[in-house]
Image 1 (spheres, rainbow, N blue to C red):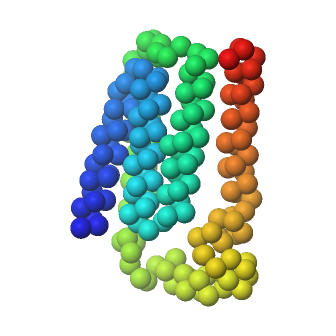
Image 2 (cartoon, rainbow, N blue to C red; image 1 turned 90 degrees about the vertical axis):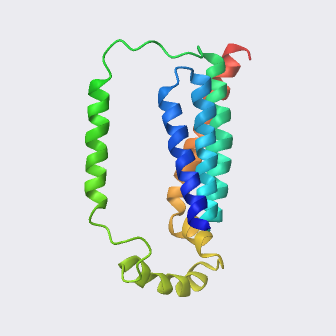
Length: 173
């Protein structure tokens, strides 16, 4: 049943992605990107990554959407018509996709127990409470082992919010 739910969510993600690429309205793109983020949070929830799902829903579907909509309030809501052919960007995207597929072709099958990641997992789980004092392993990794990365992400979102607020204040909105 779980694999069916994931398949449906991934199909919806692909459909929303196609809609984002095809739309010419920036407002519609923001709404669709917010929906994409919410679907991605749902995938993370199904995969039992609740902390990541909550963060994705709050930042991706919530704060980012508000920041984008605020920026759209200050600008035009339709995209300018393309001046050139889309063949070069399509070729770059195709080459990038092929490189990514080549890169992941050497990875071990998903969930196999013999990978280095799964061999080190029990050691992490055993060491985390003693090293960090945090009982939840995911929270410990995000807040302690990757604390500077999390701080950097927070600073970027905060800076974006400040920039939009400065633009709104300057405009008098």
